[in-house]
Every structure is written in structure tokens, then in C-alpha cells.
Length: 200
Length: 234
Image (tube, rainbow over all chains, first blue to last red):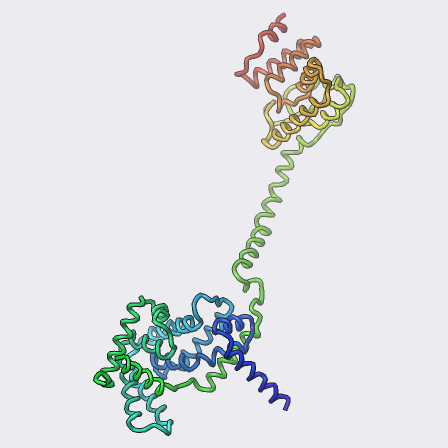
């Protein structure tokens, strides 16, 4: 009884923290030893980050990379300073780690197409409400994303998954704002063509 | 066009629902808790760089500089020892003073003349500078010794001027006394002349000649007053 009350209190405080604190404050709190702050931060970003890694590296490396990126965040907690948003910092780490993995495995991002598509199909299968047409469209979209050039896919995912603005994307990818904007425009154009949305 | 883009975004959000496994969540959160429980600084070497740099500097000072300074200290002490030795002042020690004036140039202590007033004598006791045995007469063994002697002389001269009677004649006498008592190391040629003049007045012609020869030796470019030389002519 007492333990369940404590758990409930903990959940309430975490929820309040989730609503009130910014990512940056949470990270600073964690750097001062508040493990609950990290938990809130983790739950906020785990899904988008995981999918970003999954789409960029494929399921074979996704778990390993995901864990490694968060461990880097943990180990960098004492040196963390608010220079940009936490999200920008996190995706900066993620991008660098993904590039390291490409180099280490001596692979190119486009080699992961088949694996990425297989995970999409698995995921779709567990959704009971999926209809045949919707499923078909989802598959085509994921295939189109997987076939995008790496730079364009990266920009698309950073926008769609991380919800980053173009200037933040430019900062993470190390290109100008115009270049990031151009990459996104090309990516969207290709996706529209593949999904035949142009004439709608 | 933007409708089509929005449709793609919506479709992507509907499709993109993958999450990391629960085991992964547990592992990462566990790691974060363990890390936050660990002290960030476990020892002096894990400190941030300014603290580490300070620590390294202390070690360098303790292990290198302190032994070096200790090694140099005895040498300095040896060099300064003669200068710091002082011979107690003995009043009415006219003979000692005379022998001092006539003595050769090897290291020796200066003794104040007995004819001084009480106040000036007290001051003169402080002016005890000696040349090292190896050094040439009239040249201080080190800059430090010379500077110290100069400081003492200037302060004593200032005090003498304050304390001695006001009349010009007495002022001259007090300057002569200062010249008499000044060590070789701080004697200017003018002061030396005054000293020689005083010796001539006292009838110590031989000593005056010796002093003149010493003066010429140490200040070869200095032109000695002709009147003074005339007084010494036989």
C-alpha cells in the first residue's frame, strides 16, 4: 500500500516535471545528480530518436546505436552546457555516431533498404485496424524514404521525427540553411512522385 | 503542393510508430541512475583541468624548485656572511679607526670614528659593510650588498642632516664625518677627497698619500683637486 502510494507520487512528480521543465533544464538537473530528470528526458525523446536511427542505419544496428548514443549523453552530463537546444545536441551526437557506424561497418546507408522495409511490414502487421490500402501506402512511403539519397533522407527524418526547424537541421548536418532547405525540397518532391501525390 | 507535403507527413506519422524495446529502456535508465549516483570527482586526477593544473604546479614547485632554492641558499649565505658580520662599535677606538684608514684593501669591517656625536654614532653603528676578501677594494661583492649599503648610507645621511646643528660650519663637519665613516664600497671620489682633506688637517700626511693613491686607483678618470695635492707636496 505504502509502496504503491510512493510509486504514484513518483509518477505524479515525473508528469509534472515533464510538463514544466525544458529539456535543457532537465539535462542540467540530471548533471546535478537528479536521475528522475533524465527519465523524463529519455521518455520525451526515445521514440523519435530510435526511429531516426532505425531509418538511417537499419534494425541490425539500431538497438546498439540507440543505447550507445544515450550512454554518451549520460557520460557527457558533467560537461553539458546550454549552447543550443538539447534536441540539437542529442541529434548531433546521434548523427556522428551513425556516421561512425557507417565507416566502421564499411557500409553505405542505402544498403539497409531491405532490412528497413522488413521492419515496416512487421510493425504494420501488428496493427489490427490497418486496411489493405493504407498498408499499401505505408509500405510505398517507407520504401520511398529508404530510397532517398542519404542527405535528403536525413533532413526529412530530422524534420519529421525530431521536429527540428531548418536552421537547426542545417546546424546538425553542417550545411547552410539554404542547402538544408533544398535537400528537404528535393526529398519531398521525390516522395510525392513515388506516392503519386503530385496530381492531387 | 503543401497539401501533398502535409499528407506525406501525416502518413509518415501514422506509419512511424516503432519504439525501443523495454529491455533497452531498462538498461539505459539503469545506466543513467548508476551514473548519477557515482561521485563525479573521485580523486585529484579526475578533477577539472584548472584544479588539475594547480595540483601539478604544486608538485613541480615542491619537487623541483624547493630543492633548487635550498641548494642555492647556502651559496648565497656564504657570499653574504662577511657583509652581515659586524664588529661591535668601541668608543674611543681611535687606533682602530686609524688602522682602518691605512689598512690595505682586503675584506674588513668599518668602524665608526670616535669623534662622532652620540646621535651620529648610533646611526653609524648601522653602517657596517664589508668588502669580500676576493673582491677588489672599493667594489662591492654583489649588487645586493652595494644596494643595501647605499640605502643605509643615504638614510643615515638624511638623519644626520636632521639631527646635527644647523650652522653651515657644523654641517660641513658632519659631512666630513660621514665621509670618514663611509665604506669603500659607497665612497664617491668627492667624499674620498673630504676624507683625505681631513687626514691632512690632522697631520696624517702618509695616510693621506695612501688614500690618494687608492683614490687614483679606483677612480682613474677623476681629477683630484689641485689644492689638495699641493698640500701633500713636501
